[in-house]
Length: 273
View 1 (cartoon, rainbow, N blue to C red):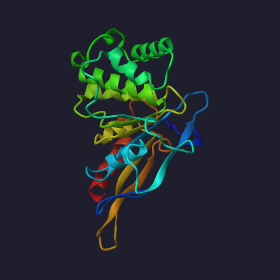
View 2: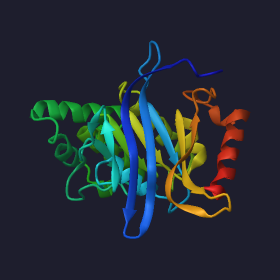
View 3: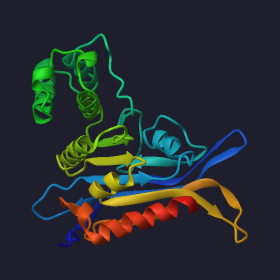
View 4: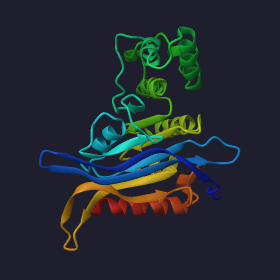
């Protein structure tokens, strides 16, 4: 069944001609990205973008620039036509850093105070997320008492409380067994579709899992001269619109021959990036 019944709305996140040079090393060169609101009639459709590329290609640096944590050498990142400010984009690191001396509620209170002044409203918002993510009974536990998957969910809630609509997830499938990958994939999809403007960007080495929940895939790499010499500075070399391919927004897509072929194509491109 095709999944291409959509239109585009306003630009939500824009990376405008971003380059990064650290010392003599050109890390990023002229990176341009435009994430628009995806509109599906009768549905709330957030965005999930899969961000793929070999290790050392500059994904983490671009990640930090998009979050406002690192200033590019040139160019700029905009959220809805305004320059990004630190804190507007939530970043969920691979190790899910939480305050070990605070309970789940304590950790989330710290995050929620940044955006919600009223204490009752803060508690209501926190409890709403905990209930939605099946963590209500963990509210008084400490991070050391949680499983890795539970810590990940708390870290995601923490960033949702801070940043509202924009999340960057660093390797969310790393070290998970197939059942947990499926659970985390469902969670990410649910978060994306909580609000029309929700925008989730996933950096991952798990091509299959990332492609299965993304509506767009970016492949990052470096250009080469006609003689095959690598030109310094990475950029987005390939973009896959999963919606137009009928491979977005549906369960069981990983069994579709077209999906299997696409994943194979992406994996074959990696050595060329």
